[in-house]
Amino acid sequence: MHKTILAQIDSPKALRRLKTGDLPDLALELRDFIIDIVSTKEGHLGASLGVVELTIAIHYIFDTPNDKLIWDVGHQAYGHKILTGRKSIFDTNRQLGGISGFPKRSESEYDAFGTGHSSTSISAILGMAIASGIKGDTERQHIAVIGDASIASGMAFEALNHLGSTKANVLVILNDNAIGIDPSVGALKKYLTNVKKGTAKEENIFECLNLNYTGPVDGHDLPLLLKELERLKSVKGPKLLHVITTKGKGLQSAEDDQVVYHAPGKFNKSTGELQAKTDTDQPAKYQDVFGHTLVELAEKNKKITGITPAMPTGSSLKYMMAKMPDRAFDVGIAEQHAVTLAAGMAAEGLMPFCTIYSTFLQRAYDQVIHDVALQNLPVIFCLDRAGIVGQDGATHHGVYDMAYLRCIPNLVIFAPMNETELRNIMYTAQLGLSHPIAIRYPRGQGVQVHWKSPFDRIEIGSSRELRKGSKIAILSIGHIGNTVAEVIEEFSNDQIGHYDMRFVKPLDKKNLYTIFENYEYVLSIEDGCKAGGFGSAVLEFANETAHANKLVIMGIDDLFLEHGTVQELHRLAKIDAASLKTRIKILLDS
Ligand SMILES: Cc1ncc(C[n+]2csc(CCOP(=O)(O)OP(=O)(O)O)c2C)c(N)n1
Ligand SMILES: CC(=O)[C@@H](O)[C@H](O)COP(=O)(O)O
Ligand SMILES: [Mg+2]
Image 1 (tube, protein in one colour):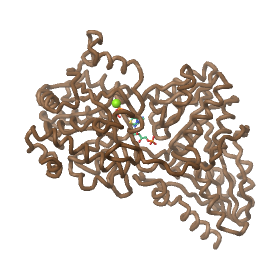
Image 2 (image 1 turned 90 degrees about the vertical axis):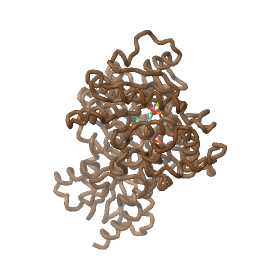
Image 3 (image 1 turned 120 degrees about the vertical axis):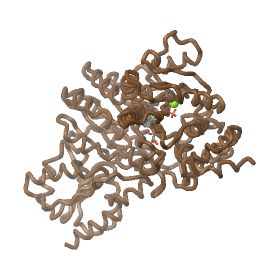
């Protein structure tokens, strides 16, 4: 009997034909299935395990896909994917050519809205509910599932503020597990904890916002969930169901270490034990070089502060937070606030290192312009996960930052080719800059095993000549310069020069002028979009000096790159070693 129910479910329609008594067994099977696949294929684990009962209950009670269902962030939607016709291809999750790790409109009619960045679900579902109203569809249900960390973000609050002033038929399900990737933070978290303890003040914050509030209810109690959802189906207007769940539910190690099991990599599906890393003599991750270097600098320079919007582990700001809790802040999923908070600190003479994933800084674009650059406040942005990030895919690649930052006056943009360069620019920045600076570095490892070098000051706007040549000059920006260095080793002649340009802005125009004068061809390469990026900056320079005909730009074309390994995606984007080799050969032969 057990192990057979999930096999029958190829759609929510099949699910809805089950007896309610079968659903607890289905929940067990669904958990096992998720654990089984994620243990070898990797991905986000804890969040999906936590909402197994909720996922079953929603699809059981509501008429998806006619009723609209949005999963905020979407990293918890594995159960949803499996129950909505993607069970047989779930083992392709996050792999090249496979299904996305996040809901995606083009993938399934059950994915009502594409997510990946958090806190968008309430706005989007309200938009859909308003659309249903305008189209005269009064029966359709609209459901957004949002986590406790995501609902604390500004965008979610903006949406709640609007929602509560409407009669829209929207159900917000607050999935409260008291943790984001790292433990949730802030006053709202304290409030929700008090609600759970029954010690909250009499007025309920959601009722004050004019939402019909139910809860808190046990999100693992399937009969209770079914009952509440069935009841709420006939309650008109905006409403919020507060469910309490355990992230990682059903796998003991994932419940015990929720931070690690958010996305644990490969693990033993029976014991939960993580697959041991075999090679210890590996270069450190850039994020760790950042995190440890910041502590090192902050120990001497008391003006240094650190800020992360909800990514203390991912960015490694956790090291400073542990050592200097008064000077290092996790502000929750609040990129806009993080940037303007840093601006305020800089205005008062502090030296804030504001570390944000490249992709998530997109949300704080106006704050970078209006609050930082326009006022020329020397905030130090450390943009982690810049470039292609791999399996998280299109929502997460950090490939636009050079383009979207380069057009902002006053802003310096630097990309380290290795750990030493990252350390040195961090050191330089805290010596005192007269401008804000964005330092972009990729996900994963650098190239140096022994990275703890003594500090050296870097002259702003200076590039490095790594190899002198005569025919082709390769200009690289950041970590991708290591691919260039490797590739040109294979060309024994001295025709190829290599320049680590370091600064997207200001460009080292003096050096560029000499390069364009002395080489027949100049080839720029970047792990960002070509439109408006580093190569575009070089092209603008080349135009000014009438050398544009010498320039070849390698970068990412005008398209959204999907998911796959970083290597696969570099190959697809034609910025990998083989593509570079081909380009070089063509130029050498011409
Ligand atoms: C705008 C934005 N910032 C940061 C992230 C990174 N991120 C992904 S999941 C997550 C935590 C979400 O926590 P919560 O909403 O409580 O959901 P749970 O994982 O607990 O289910 C964060 C910070 C993101 N996806 N989007
Ligand atoms: C869902 C989400 O946005 C994060 O969990 C993201 O996948 C983190 O990526 P890193 O593994 O690069 O920290
Ligand atoms: Mg949570």
